[in-house]
Image (cartoon, rainbow, N blue to C red; front, side, top):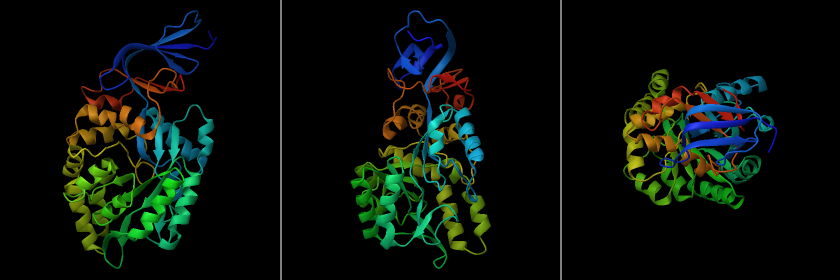
Length: 363
């Protein structure tokens, strides 16, 4: 038996949506369901425990202007941690945040490298901005730099067209996605509009971010291919404000953004009903604040997703999708404890009682 302090979590431990245990123990930073003998120092935490929450679309090291300093990135990561987010899929960042991996008090990050965008078709200072003939090479580069994901910008405003249009020719994305898969990486893409979706899905993409452009024609295709979506509804809430800002120069784009916003809940519910995997992501770190994971889960419920399914989209299911453990025996003890059962009311997520990361109480 180690001389390290032992943590005893008791009450209700939500190992899975239906698998509930009365207690777990944290020994040397790891989950155990066997009561230890001879522990010198035992600290008890009571409540409803969930695996550390997942934000599957987050940007640590990024703000509205581009990369940020390490101290700002640290504050972003701490804000997410204190909200209960202990696993982040960083969906594109120009910052090198590998130093976070050495910090046991900061969330674990799965990186998608830097965004890959068409020249002058994305937010300045965010992405590699390239032309289609270079797409395969840049995807290969980011597949090697990331943690098993690559992030494309699938559509953006075309100033000549005055509206959102697809960024990449069909054959270019087909070759690029095939190269990423050859290198063992999955591919996701930013997509607001309708036009790029069929080409990306038929090219073999693994996930679409935002996915506001899903329609009756493309939803069955996503479901058939098992392509996941991360709706980022807390970000989609900003579409009316964006539309107002672009009204005078790009009236078609503004009208389109309002339409996408108005049908956002129907789109997400239709996707879920069709069997498309849906996961929680906030899009924090661009124009949005960090620490919004509870709000995004609540938005999924507002859209009509059952509360337990919305919880799974940030807990058990999200961790399984990303290949990371939950509260299994021997796993790193990353968990959040709440006053009440979050399955009964997901708003409980907004007020963690305790946050435990790598077996230590950090919040």
